[in-house]
Image (cartoon, rainbow, N blue to C red; front, side, top):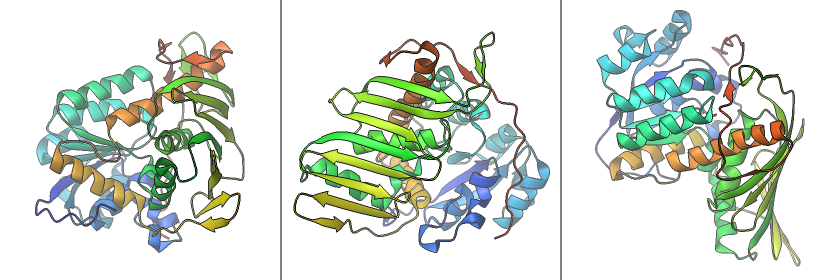
Length: 354
């Protein structure tokens, strides 16, 4: 997609959070055409970046990741602040849990980073999200969120088909997804925004399950699941359903339907007269995201992603939560209830080998 850039500059990258998404999810992959998956593997593969440093509060995880990606011992840290200040990377990748993400992103933005690649969800609260936005805008820092379907070649073919209106105007979006609100919901909402050409949200209505709420602290103690409706300002409605064993997206247009099936492995178009498959080249969405971030540094402006769309999908997440708590629709823009995700969880041990 963007990996044909010919610029000579190579940017240095540093990783905060060396666990699954940061360094080792590639060991769970079975499709080499879609690799690399992890942040570290992406920077190693990208011709425009050098991974020079890594940091994790768990010294054993940090050391294994550092050795796996040939990072010098002196650039393997347990203190991310020290890493950023001493190695001065152009790009900082933040692959921690949402509860720690804002502090790291803001520090990186305020201390010389040209770009930040942050895992989803963007933050543990809407206030943190806005603080991250302010830090990136103030310091002219490019930002991409790890909602990888935005950078997937198949989903881009789907979005382009909708945008060109050869099937007529888009009327309805339907998403059937597995996973929780902060995890899969981040992917889901960002993709719905992309398929609807980044139209602003008018309102959301949601009903959530597995919802553990501390009303006194205004803290969410779980990452819930559920379903909801998103109404956009352009009149399109999106229906998001949590289904335990299915990932599928339908875009219903005036004169046909385009569907992403099996998590985007196949894209099918139905019209009144024919059915056909969308043709696309399989590529690594992680690598596409990194090249997009590089292009954003080169040109001093966002391309396929950016901080603005990242904030929009985060507002949908917290809009869903507020709708569930209020038992009513939430109209945008809305006043935040200062909800914060604060789970009691133990870090997972990554899969170090295939």
